[in-house]
Structures are given as structure tokens and as C-alpha cells.
Image (cartoon, rainbow, N blue to C red):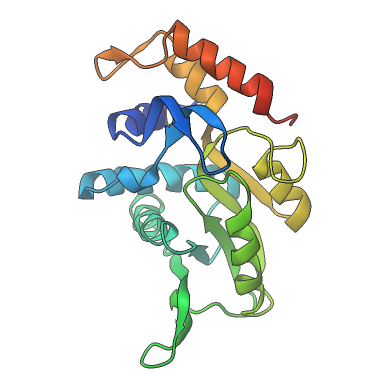
Length: 226
């Protein structure tokens, strides 16, 4: 596993973004882990987060694209931080764009925030985590309505590796099949377990035998086939 991915896993835990225990998800599932990207709140955290995203996007999609689209609301700071990191790390000026939940009818009017999208633009979508793919259902038509564009793919921070909404495949795999573009994550839960199981992180072991057993049981029930 690449060094930046190992660092990112520890960064999620140290930032209190990735937690282990017992959590009830929106779906009603009882999960032994929970991720909340809203816990990234400081300048240094956002700087590091943007760098990890930029490295993963560069690895999977290169730098030959024009716009990083972050769906409102959590995608807005993710997109901004990652565009800054792209400029710093790779000397490439990527523009950020987001949607508004409600269209603005004065001043900077319209449904979009940030850079306009034009014919010929190549776009990467950035999100925190995708469990059901619902946000892409909302985002995809907004982007497509702007013109003749190419969506290179989606990047999320964590692949939960769970069954999606309509099949036994993961949400990321469902997105690939439904929309025809790639969907990747900085790390997967398999990476997380491999890196943290019975190893110290921030002076403590966060995945011990008990948590590992709970994670294994969870994936017996809800793990994706692919």
C-alpha cells in the first residue's frame, strides 16, 4: 500500500473522522465503523485532506482535466481544498465547481457555484463517501445539462465495500455500471483493516480482535460481491 494511503488512514482516525464501535446508519444497518467527513474543521486538516485527494486523483485520473466538481454541501470544501493542493503539488490549475441546493436568481445567478462548465470540459467528481449512490443521481444530470462534457470519474475518500442500493455490488461498482465512468476511493475498508488491525494509531489500538470480529461479521451480512 502506498505511503500516502497509510498516512491517510491514520489521519482519518486522528481527526476523529473514522470511528469504531457501534453505529446506526441511515439505512438502518448497525455498523462497527462510521465515517464523518464533517469532522475535518481546521485549516491544517483541510490542507492535508486536499493533498491526499489530489494524490489519489492524480494516480487514477492524471491531471488532464479541467474541473473538479464537488456536490453541495460537503463536496464544496473538498473541491476547493483539492484544487489548491493540485496547484501546489503538480503546478496544475484545476477549476472548482459545485451546485447550489437552490438556484440563485440575482448577481451570480444560476444553479452552479464556482467555475462555469462548458462544452469540451473534462470533469472529475469529488465526494466524501458513497454508500448508496443517491448523490450521483442528483449530480449527474446537473453536470450533463451544462453541455457536451466528459466525466472522467468519481473520487471518494473511503470505499465502504458494502452492497449498493440495487444489487450485491458495491455502490462504486454500481456507479461505474450505471453511468459509464470510473469510481475510485483513496482507500477501502480492506486497506483500513489491513493497516490498523492490532497496530497502534495515535497511541492506541483502534481495531483490536473484538472490533475485527465485528467488522468481519458486518461484511458477512452486507459485504459487496465485487
